[in-house]
Amino acid sequence: MRISGVLSFAGWALLTAVIPLALAASARPVEEARFGGPEMSWWIAVAAVLPAAVAAARARRERDAPKAIGTGLAVAALYVAATVAVYAFVFPMEAHPIDLPVLLSAVTAPAGAVAGHFIGRKAEERRGAGEQQRAEARGTSEEQRTSEEQRTSEEQRTSEEQRTSEAGRTSAQRSEPRPAKTVLTAAGVALFGALLMPGTLADAAQFSTVDQTGPEPHANQPAVFDVPAAGRYTLVGDGDPPPDPGCRLVRPGAPDVPAVPLTIQPEEAGYDATPGETTIADLDVPAAGIYTLTCSSPGDTDYRVTPVRSISPVADSLMRWPLPLLMLVGALPGLALLAATARRRLPGAPVLSQRGASRVK
Image (cartoon, rainbow, N blue to C red; front, side):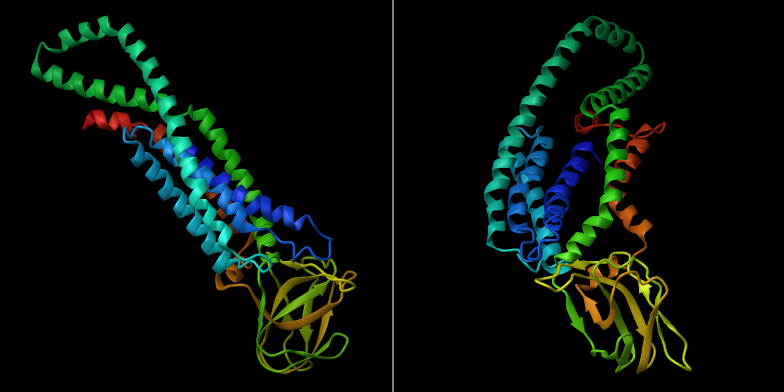
C-alpha cells in the first residue's frame, strides 16, 4: 500500500461525502434544508479527476501512455461505481437522487488520467536523470567491486544477490516517501477518519429517504400509546432531545420496555411551524397493549412512538454499531498504511519497488 493511494481514497471521501454532506447540513435551521440537500451527482463527476490522475501517475513506468491512462480510467470507474451504489442503495438521497450529471465523470476522469500520466512521467524522467548522474559518479568503485567478485563463482553469485537486494532497497527508498513522513500522514488520515466517520454517517442519514414499516401506535393521550402488535418501534423526539433520555414503555403486570438509543441519530429539518425531529432509539415491544412512555431525562422535548424507521439494511445496521467500531472503520485507511509501513521496516521484509522487482526477474 502506498501513501498516494491512501491520500487518493481520503480525498475522494472528502469530496464525495464529508464536504458536501457537511455543507448541506450546515444550512440548518433553514426550513428547506432537506430539499436543498447535496447535489451528489455533480460532486462525484468533479471528484472523478482525483483517482484517475493518481492512478495514472502511479502507472508512470508504463511507456505505453494508453495503458497508464487506461489504468487511471479503470480506477476512477471503480470509485464512481462504488459511490453511486452507496448513494443509490445504502443512503439513497431524498432531495437529489443520483442522476444524469454523474455521467460527466466520463469526461472528467479521462482529463484527470491524461494529466496524471504526463505529470508522473515528467517526475520519473527527472528522477531517472538524477539516478544516472549518481550511477556515473559511482562507476569506478562499481568496476573495482565487479573485478573482485569474479575471483570465484560462489563469491560472484553471493555478491550478485547482495547487489540486487541493495539495488531494490535503494530504488524503494527513492520511490517511497521517508518512513517518518509516511507514518505521520497515515496517523493523520486515521485520526481524521475516526473523528469524521460518525458525523458523516449522521449527515448521510439525515438526507436519505426514510421509510416507515409496521403498524402505527395510537396515542390515546399524551405519553400513552396503544401498541397494536408486538415488534420493533422507533422513539422519536421533537426539537433537540438528549442522546439518551432514559425512556421506557411501562405496562402494569409486564416488564418495562427500555428504549435502546441509536449510535447514529438522524435528524430531520422542520418546515414552516413544524419543529424538526430526531430518531432516537429502538423499542422492542414483546406484546400488544396500552403502554405509558416515561423518560428520566426528557429535556424540553416531546416524544412519540412511531412505526420502525428504515433507510436500508446496511444503513440501519451502521446506525446501531458501537461508536468505537464506527471510528475504527473510519480509521482503517490510515491504519492499513501504518501496518504496511511497519511491515516494510521489519528485518528481512521485502522492500522492492516495481523497478527493483524487475531487476530481480
